[in-house]
Image 1 (cartoon, one colour):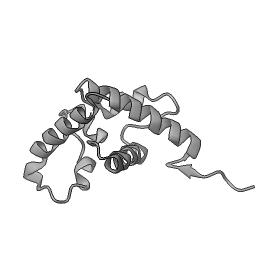
Image 2 (cartoon, rainbow, N blue to C red):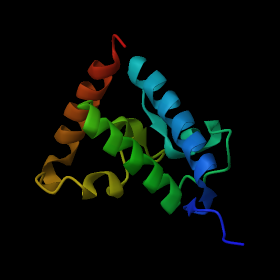
Image 3 (tube, rainbow, N blue to C red):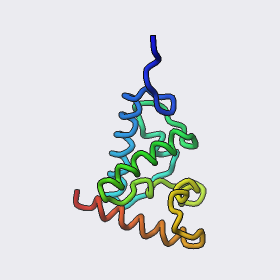
Length: 122
């Protein structure tokens, strides 16, 4: 019998539940103009345990960002930050090839504003 399809070790149905929960949590934070740590986000997801420092968390935020891009919204992943310094991890900036490292902070702040504003009245 073939093994059911999985993403980052999760059954696809479970992955979709994880993604929906994370999306809802991040939208709520965007409306409140609040950041959330990787650990807090992982702790709020009920569908399955997600390690905040795993490839699954990175993939989760990437999947949500791709949907944001298609919908023309600000990136919800912008709200997810490290506990140590209140800024996104290095993976957040990997896809932003046109932004020089010295401009990361201003880029992140502008994207935070854009993201929160895109969810303000929705």
